[in-house]
Image 1 (tube, rainbow, N blue to C red):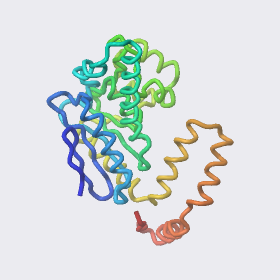
Image 2 (image 1 turned 45 degrees about the vertical axis):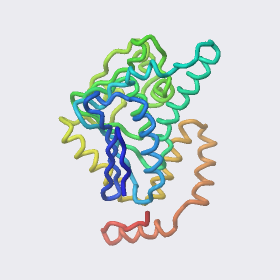
Image 3 (image 1 turned 90 degrees about the vertical axis):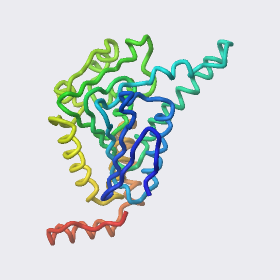
Amino acid sequence: MTPTYETLTVALNEHIALIELNRANKANALNAVMWRELEESFRWADTIADVRVIVLAAQGKHFCSGLDLSMFNELVEGETEAARKAEKLRITIKQLQGNLNAIEQCRKPVLAAIHSSCIGGGVDMVCCCDMRYCTRDAHFSIKEIDMGMTADVGTLQRLPKLISDGMTRELAFTGRKVNAQEALRLGLVNHVYDDREQLLEEVMGIASLIASKSPIAVRGVKEMLLYSRDHSVIDSLNYVATWNAGMLSVEDVLKSVDAQQQNKQADYED
């Protein structure tokens, strides 16, 4: 049974969970409910054995227009003393970071399928994903600078790991739009597709291929890549040696070898 949300739709089919932003009438702006439900949905996907891969997409004309501006008034209401007001805002920002951290912390690969606008908080969101794909009409913008604020939910921390530091700085300082072809050239997205229909078809195909692999091996790959991003080569080599010493599935290896010899698809346990 897939969960039901106010701002998201979730479907599970053949080991692939499709999580879609569903505030189309608000350009999928991130309101307080959507922030919370994003974390809940990815925590759910992480714990469900039948889910091997997640595709994050959106309904409507836009992928995500960023933070719902109605949230600004709610962020520090009720506090007047400066230090307490600042503390409350810091706690709120940490909560929002945690909502999106759940995407990165999910043990299963997350593929973002992006169409049209991906702005502000939308960029924070897709930077948490393992891979990003977009339509020809997609564009990206670190819009916080034009709102007089410093992006604070992950873009400035994750984007330099995805594209060059210099380009990250240019985009963060200027807030300018990056179109699909530039995003592809920068390495922000893996492929560009003609429209949303083709985007979803192709991304679901990639997700299906990943879902056909040993789930425990796939989860190990994600664990190692994230660890290696934030640690030295030597530390990462030590970790993968320890990981495989305890987590290598002999059963899955034997199934893989047998399937290749017989030119068939291996049937792995979740």
